[in-house]
Image (cartoon, rainbow, N blue to C red; front, top):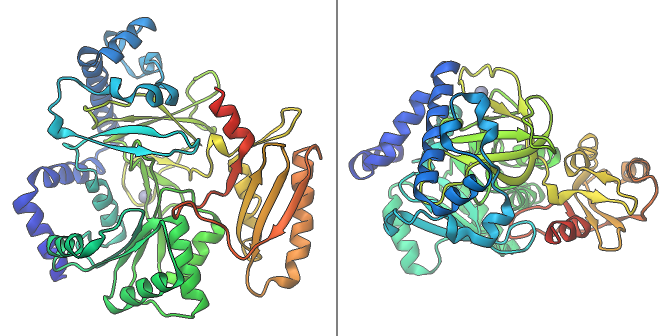
Length: 450
Ligand SMILES: [Zn+2]
């Protein structure tokens, strides 16, 4: 309580812009559909016009496509805005940067991305993106000022950085675990700190959180202070979710984001779907002809409505997803999208050209979450498929039967064109805390070859 009060006081005193944006976000989520739509549409139009007028890349690209922002009269004109492909950003991220903006507002990170080709991503420092997390916390009745456990690729290292972090966050206690190298000792220490410091919420990559959950269950540790698990950056399988809820003793909030646009949608306690941060991010779902889809799965395009440093407009992220056309009972008007389970790069292919969708592949294990603890489907460059799996403890008597059924399913899906091998393993390798459920060398080769 004291931690939370002081957190808000500090922000009111020293971070006025963040507080202004936060208040705006809290207001927006209760707007009626029509008013929310007009907030989103107004921001989209402003951003497209701004990019066209200030950034030579957008002017040239839009001119070449025969598009002008003046064409944006109503929602139906939105499809006229040319799509920004990943390849365009990968090859020329610098060209997207607004030459008129002060360097003090520009920050950038580099991402490996699912294709392994590094890519530069620019952010607008004027937007305080943590406010979207704060908003979601109000749904879950926790506070950003509560004691926190974080497992991330970057954690404060060395006594200076750690001291600075403690002073900055005091009196809130934050405990860290580096997701890029997790030994059992480090996980043990992390869990010990969570219990001792009465941590209220824990956040991190799904894969890293799963490792911690495994440890807690294996050692039969009791964690009773946690009220929320905030799982980020990777799709969450049903079995991983169930395991986390059991180990941490609380609900898991799923969040969808990417390196380019960190926070796109978040789950509330009342729905299995996620609320799109519709006042700050626009989401389109399109088919293979780039035609908008409203009730089917397709490619996700995002428009970051707050990035004026290097705008991303109708940017094809490489994820597939769909809207959930239903109203959430929580009363928040932000629209819902379904859980994003896989990526375009997570497709399995056969030599004759059959594509087995990663989204679908992930779900074939859903019915066996009581038997299979972890899995990974790996397709090699010669099309052969290996399914690595770790059985649940106590499921030894069921596992053979399940493998036979999964084998049949996969063979049927791939018309028996490729050899499929099931391999039992001790654990599935994490990529810096991110679990990849599907890895396909064939899909990666297709992407890299354009
Ligand atoms: Zn809701």
